[in-house]
Image 1 (cartoon, helix red, strand yellow):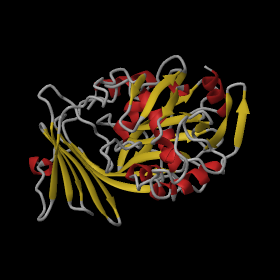
Image 2 (cartoon, helix red, strand yellow):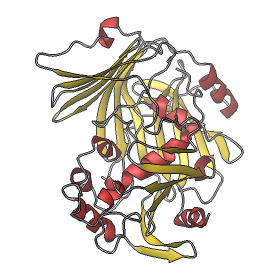
Image 3 (cartoon, helix red, strand yellow):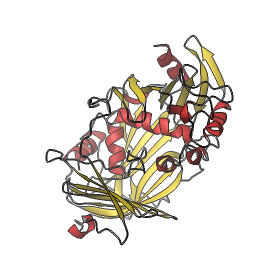
Image 4 (cartoon, one colour):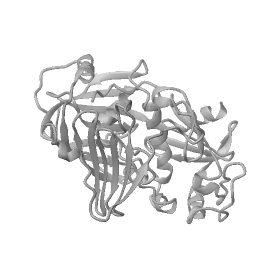
Length: 396
């Protein structure tokens, strides 16, 4: 479970977090309760990075709490109006997950809320997703060559959650940006989930990034991330925090990864084919046609990566026009084959500030940690960057 395995995934941290936040919301949160800093032997930043690279994890179970305060306008109800996409809810407020890990072929994540539970379970080649509220399950048989699995919790549409399921997964994404654009230092020691931890601090050097710091608390003995925090410029409270509140490094029993269908469950079998609808696999993450009808590419690298997506008529609330926000070229007007509430969604988006320049015109949504530009010609640009960087990308 090395946290430096996938250095390309940062490109999707930017677009997924910022893009989904267009229909998300914000809730004020604090930080996890802290205790006195433990006295630990000094470690340099280079030593902590080596600890991460060389750590070996045979097993783990525990409780993870996610918190998000992205400083958005009051758009939380858009999630319901736009079809109730469960993924947007993980970008707001506080959420609790239970996680189990027993090697690369046995993993389980359970999202717990007041209305039910949603589980992602991998047991060898079997991948199960179960929704308690509807008592439905989806099963996929993974190819023999597939040695890894998606560790994020899927939503009802089968796509990945924008917010990481564990501190280790979050660290995977952030550490992809460790290059000359990043200053890496050692922070204070900490006590997380009852365990001593060192703190590794990543600070972007580019002033166009809205990320002030990323702080990763590493278990002093196991070298596994226990807490992950993202701080926006101008604040000392995390905009995103993923942390263990309880953790056990014993290997879970095999029974934890066997899906036992409850009475009356409806099971849907899915193909293991992961190619995109046009038959082309999205191999490098830079460009691609996604199943939701968007054509995407990225501009820039590292912390100032910008996602540029062009939506088809089905995108952006059904391509509705309301409140002065044109949909994509050729998009339908509100009410023409649009989903219920599409006009309300477009109307709320229409209340966003108007912006214009030599790149064109559109609307701007900005939070503590990101900016999203919706242009009148049907593009969406998003990133953990200032609006000025989006305008620069729009010109190109």
